[in-house]
Length: 338
Image (cartoon, rainbow, N blue to C red; front, side, top):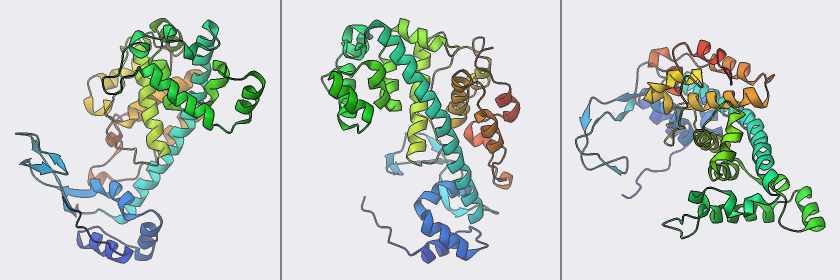
């Protein structure tokens, strides 16, 4: 379908929002926000303010995707709900921005600690363990991709080599000059990003996975691998400044039993909560309790959640993140090992 929406000035954009019922009490400030943040980015935050249709059975395409047969849905209308304001959308944007920065703060510490866990565990077996297919699970090191014709290990090695070759770090230059390639795993791991690290862990043998996950109170290393994939997704959302607070998580982490990790009990019977970022924040807290037990991050995150904008008149609250009604009790009662 040809794109037909015309270019609009910031004043025209604001007039369009006002015509659809969005309340603007400070026009100069609203214009400044449109100029600084952009209409399209802010639209993700006023989207929940829009009126919804009644139940509809969609035919043909909707939103560029084929409608599912006999699927009854509601769709967002152009008009805004009563009481929706431009200021509230900006407050929600600022809340989300601070949430992403807090998430990145925890993820940095977790990533560094897991690099040590993986490199120390594999390095004990072989200084260059990441090169040896025999030291990984056959699904990772032997099974070919149907579409690519290579193993996931082969693909991982290509990404790893690019990171080494593109690195400008002095320690990489020093080790290349003094010892040549390959780099020992405890050196090489320092160039891995979260995705490279989590994919290598995903490909490890079960005994090494379990040895690492046990440090975090999780007996099953395969479950822990899905946690790392989830945290990598969280990291990518935050690093690209994307909307987080009510984002849907497609690749949802698996959960251990509540007998093993009591705080997961809330998520077991709530599919909505399993598909929102509060679960990933709980996972981050669980790991951080081991990585840095004295960290103030859980308190800072709790305080920030308490600052969620008052949008009760629009039926919006922390439930959009997947948090329970008694989220503060749930959050403060969590420990990594119980």
